[in-house]
Length: 67
Image (cartoon, rainbow, N blue to C red):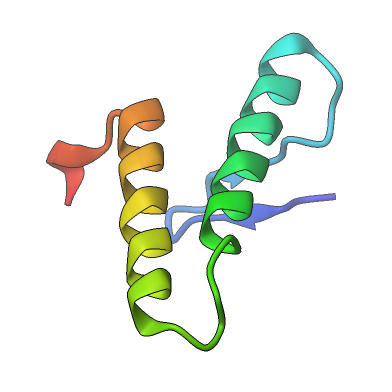
């Protein structure tokens, strides 16, 4: 099953169980946990979760310069 395909047709699939695929899924799961860890009724909490999630992803995937 293809999980993601970019505009150039390059496919990304992380459904396997080798150590790299497991680690990437763990990092993505942590990012999702961070982004969901806010109070749905508090905009400051939402802003914190978004900022923390962005920082976590930039730190773990070195994507700051690709913006």
